[in-house]
Amino acid sequence: MYDTEPGQSPPPDGTIADPAVTPEDAEATEDSTGFTSLRDDITALVDDARTYAEAEIAFQKTRAGLAGKKAGRALVLLVLALVLLHIALIALAVGAVIALAPLVTIWGAIAIVVGVLLIGVALLVWSASGDGKALSAMFDAGEDA
Image 1 (cartoon, rainbow, N blue to C red):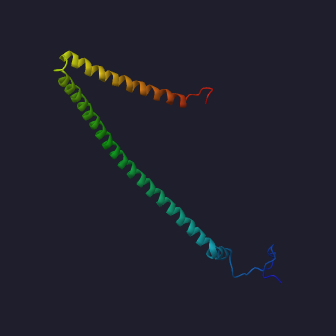
Image 2: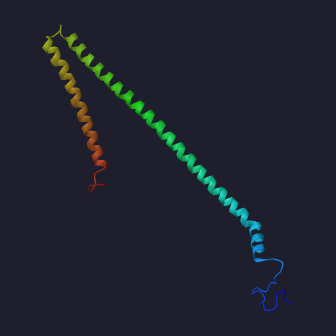
Image 3: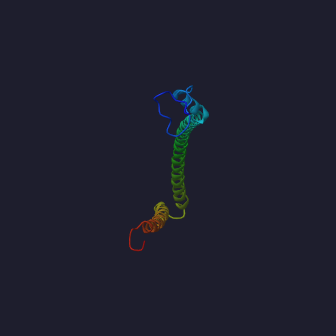
């Protein structure tokens, strides 16, 4: 009836046991049918993900280093440009004083140049103040928000 040794009960699922197949053989057969392939695929996937993450981190480090160097160079060039602009404005003011001196006295030329520069400063501060008020209104946590 069942292929079992005397004293053994038949398997609960009603299948006939093959005495030549040991439990280890059954697991090996089950593994070789698909689980080994699945395990290999998952292992390869994990290895690929790890490789991708390492490559991405290395790329981002390189990019950050390059961006830092470029930003530093740009900042130095910008400061140099502002210094040169400052020198040019001083030269313009001195030149304006020298050019106006024959028309009005030297003190009159200085007064005119300084007055024009102060009017320019006042206009710039007034404009910046308006922008500051608009910016403050954007982030105000008042009842209008």
